Image (cartoon, rainbow, N blue to C red):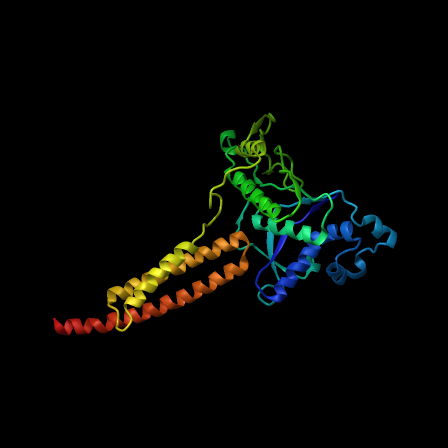
Amino acid sequence: SLGVHAGWREALSGSEADADAAQRSMAFTLGWMAAPLYTGAYPPAMRAALGDALPSFTAEQAALLRNSSDFFALQHYSTLMVSRPNATFPPLPETSFYAAEGVRWHSTRGARKNSLGWDIAPFGLYKLLKHIDETYQPRGGIVITESGFPSRGDDAAPHEATRDTARVCYLKRYLQAVHRAMGEGVPVRGYFVWSLLDAAEWEHGFGTRFGLVRVEPGTLARQPKASAVFYTRAVKAGGFNASDGECNATTQAAPRFRAEGAQLQAVVNASRGGTPSLEVSRTMLLRTVRLAALAGQQARYEAEQGDFAAARQWDSKVARLVSGAERQKRQLAKRVEQQQPAEAEAA
């Protein structure tokens, strides 16, 4: 099998234009190598963009290529969001190797970045596995032949360099994404971490370390990192424990949003039929601001999970709540201003 290096491409918005851009980018990212191996031809989107710059296969060549891999060998590290270029987001420079895609790249919403600036987005691996299975139905299933986390290759003390908790979290979350895909019928047959040892990377040399085992500069002594201990135990046990939100940037806020929303509604209902006191009005304002914060947290959580439609719905809630809070704030300020002269007159 030929290893196919591919990230996932997620549409920046819910627009049809951005959805088309994401599909086109996937054709260039994944389909460039995978489509000939499984269909005997380059993706139509690439052919439309590049024309005769792409080679053509004879019928005999296409037949030899089609389904010629024993399994789908996938190399995956990260995810990007893409959009159709416009005045706000101009296209990539013509000198860019990727300019022919006709898209604009963006950081993945809700994702943290590793030391190389790549987005950490486990949902991308889940979606990519689903896409490969649905698009190519590879015989022999899918084997993830590379997936890993880079850290800076400085000369930190060994006891510090081996505490690679960020790599442990990467492995936990990406393995959870694989497990999710497998639970939905995707035939994943293996997952190989890049890499066993710190090594000289193609582009970064010894400035970046991917290893589960630290290699001491100069002496080349080897010392297992925390990630090696975790992965060894996970392989032996056939699984691992991970608490909710253990490695996530955010945790779910929807249950608290619903509960506190009900509390605010109760305050509103109790004040119907009359003007609420200033104290009650302040309470309503504070609760509205609190709900906006919870909705924002849930939007970030949904983005981290890769459910951007849900994230946009929560964004809309945030906008409505912020607008409502601003309106309440103005009304409250006006009432306080009106009350002050009356209080001074009574005094």
